[in-house]
Length: 537
Image (cartoon, rainbow, N blue to C red; front, side, top):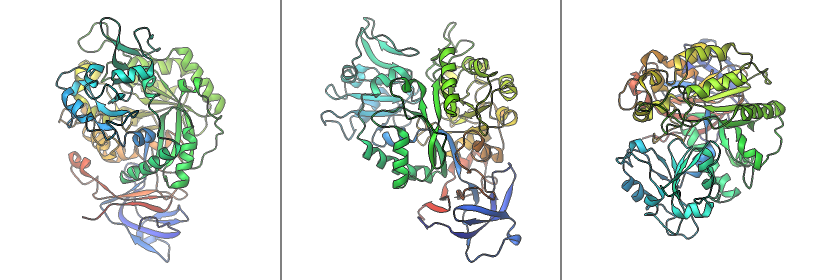
């Protein structure tokens, strides 16, 4: 029952995946005061006054999304979804934005998210001229599927003060017409944030309420612990936002990661190293862009070009400065690196540095898209302690863009989950929600299926030798994922762990691998409290 806190209950089910190994199962576990106190075979279970037989095909430890953006999810609740298959042309994108609930309200922004020019019929990025068809009096902004770039209309450019004379930000660019006037295209994070920072928050109270609603969204997907991986402090700090949301009903454990560049203009309270449900996890540094936007930093050129390598968005000095800040405050450094050249740079600059954390990697590598086996070996053998949160879900959802942008040799090295699983202890699958074109981007079963079948949503093969088993994919959301960042003692059903677990409607080990995506969470418990129960048909 929703809201029921388990004081002392024995839970039974014939298939309880414990998250301690790919083939480790139990039949019962005892929960007392929000923690697991015993796990084993049903016949050996201790006597207790209360026993509950869990329903469904499988019980799992609560799932961990080690790279997501709950505050962004909260912000796009009212934004227009502009991704395929709902939107497949610029005309359809304009028409969708015309349906925004705030269109016609003076001073309000009309916002959307999720477009990918490769999936639009015109095969080009929309411009301010296109979005001026939505409104010339209200600012309009649409976030690209990678959440790095975007496009805005003329009014938004005016509000942001971006003109012909505005220089490009470091590691980013403002698109321009031939005469030098901005065309509304905002390539990479710094350019996009130059406009997005003018999109007013509805206020601290409204943001808290929205975040509490996101907690339910996460629970429906079986997610019990998250990082918020790109927080930019403004009129308030996200740490304060989450703490207030937790007081009002946000249930998941969360670690806040602040964008390092943003701290130069808006410093936050020094992290204290405290943990608990809500805490600062670290800082995030962007080292390159995205594959789908051809801005990932590559050793060799993208398909169809002799010179296009993408670009770096941070210098070695900036990487070192971010590491020094993290070391000083004893928090993690998360480095966004998708291209193989960017990944090499992370290891070259930081590999021989002394780690500063004891229980988790001092340096996390985010996405690790085009990754070599020898670089994984370098990470594993380095003096620095590295962890990786990767995203095979991107390849599943955006395979057409990847295949169009990468050479065959580059594509064959994309998201090597098997190599990571075998070669590096702290590794996880993650969603990066909402930064992909898939309509339900933080559905863990989509990511698990992609890792197991190595088939994209359109049936395309995605380098089958990098497939993992169902149990291994689940470990990358549970027992292995917990090694990437300290999110509390979750991800395992073992004595002493938090009693955070989920029930699934089918046994993932028994169904056809290509149907894993059809699975659904039927119940979610966090610290002994049931926080979600799927409505019965």
